[in-house]
Length: 185
Image (cartoon, rainbow, N blue to C red):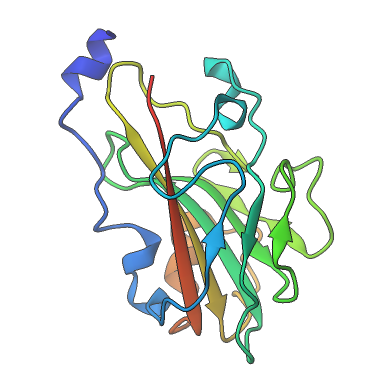
């Protein structure tokens, strides 16, 4: 067990500052979000983990139910709520065309993003960042959140940091869904 993981074991960002709880992103939970790679609450396979811990950092395949009428864009945000920081670590933020309902494995990686997917800044870089929790810190929960937005994201969405983007989004969401996977080392 890592000394750092042990020392920080009880320090966690928590769910309170998750994008899911922002007033502008509140909305009916009528979308369904799933992955072929893992079930709700189950471990995320190592191939989707960060390269620095032996993973391949390939975003998992995702699928969801069609967005409701009036959706301008879908916002996908992945956050680690167990990181020992004051706020969840944003592993991905992306804007997706509302006609898209599936993403293949690797589609959220910068070199392979398909048409209709715009990868935005995350806490560190752009595109999918795989799980890589501190060794010995215990299980981390990675919350995949999908929001159907009634208006386009602000014009500076591509250059804004993830927290600035989330603060600027106008809602409420027309629909939303979430899927949680875990990872521990």
